[in-house]
Amino acid sequence: MAYKKTLTLAAGLLATGIAGAAQAQTLRIMQYIDAPHFDVQRTTWGPGGSIGNMTQSTLVAMDWDGKKALPYLAKSWDISPDGRTYTFKLRDDVTFCSGKKFTADDVVYSFNRLKSPEIKGPFAWRAGDIKGLRAIDPYTVAYELNEPYSDLLLQLTMFSANIVNKETVEALGKDYGTKGIDGTGPWCLVSWQPRTETIMRRNEAYKWGPSMFSNPGPVKFERLSIKIMPEDSARVAAMLSGQFDFTASFPSAFIPQAKASPILNVEKIDSNFQMLYYGYKITRPMVSDVRVREAMNIAINRAQIVTGVLLGNADASVTYTSPTSLDYDPKTATIIKEDVGRAIKLLDEAGWKLGSDGIREKDGVKLAPKVYVTGGGNSVKVGEAIQGFLRKVGIDWRIQVWDSTIAPVKMAEQDYEIWSVTVPYLSAGDLMSLYFDSTNIPSPNRMNWKDAETDKWLGLAKAALNPGDKALNFGLVQEKVTREHLWMPVANINLYVVTNKKLKNARGHPMYAIGFYKGLDFTP
Image (cartoon, rainbow, N blue to C red; front, side):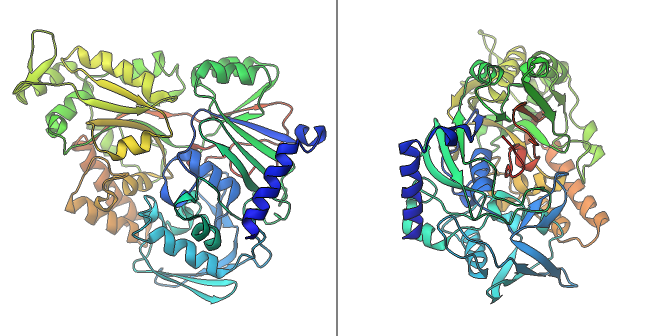
């Protein structure tokens, strides 16, 4: 098929070296973790979404402010008065990397696949409660919802809404996303060595970039290399020595060194929202008691963690969302109050008594929850700091670190009490919808939180046709889940993009804390 021929040709050119000039036209990116696969409809992981954004396209694009949707594959749209039907007018000059023409049928297929029971897409909810999609003609799609969804356009900028090629998906079957992908993005996948490197080539046909870029395409580099470097010190040394052009994975502790470097630029992306949290799987007996969860939440000192571990590159948080995020409920700021004395009292009341070794126990079981974290990020070192605080009140966190390529599989096994990620989000309502809707059990609702009131309020908020009703109901959700101590919020993490000064017109993007979006304006 055309796709396989394209991939083979690109791989052949890569193997023969193409020539020294082409090597000079390679954009070199560095990340600290890899993705388990590149099927964007089956993941919530940023590294997979990053590849999806490079190789594929959405109907609408996210502007630099992280809040506005711009035309992309859809050049315009109309919304029915009841908010249930979106009619998208599509571009007629778009092709996939394989050469296949993009049409309305691809849009219909992509969203039907996203919502299918076979895929079980963890971000399928972002596409709204779909009633059905219809191709009115080759370049017009009717997108019908069962309920109005005021955030639909913004949610459709997410990588889960990227348009895929039916021919490639069906040809590769279970190997789709590992052996190959095909999209309408500015880059085409050439090869992938898990945990090592991903290589892409320029999509020479691409000329449909969104208006947020000065250059509509093609990109100005002939190829792109994304290398995985888990060790903080290695990433710092690589950027300071000029080995890479771009990273959003520069260790926050070394940002001052990056700022002082004569060859690097540092950009802080203010429109980014990321929460570093530890979640409780409340169906596990050890953390099923809200008193135990609250005790852990109030026994730590977040200010010391931010200063001593994150070196000030974050804001300590006792709320699940940033106070500057849309639909944030300020009442939640008074619920989690750090108090070691109260933590000890709560643990005593819950029946967990100190053992001779200083660790609490109950019915012969030690209060030693298993804590799963992904290696290479902040969750490991922050978790170790929390471990120290909690041992002072008789809790022994057993931290297990997993490589990023297997962490999703291990978390899916459900054999742990606590886990941690740093989750990016668009708004307070976006985060509540993602994690606390019972239909998202077992992932990303790993708490196994199933509550009728929460589901009701989420439904009312998402279907609201005015901002006041939306904020009210999302606020009720925030207050309830915070009082249940389903998470241990720790810090709102800053997002920095570090680039080599030789790279011109480089700009970081807030999309899901990935940093790199399309790279259309990047100039060697």
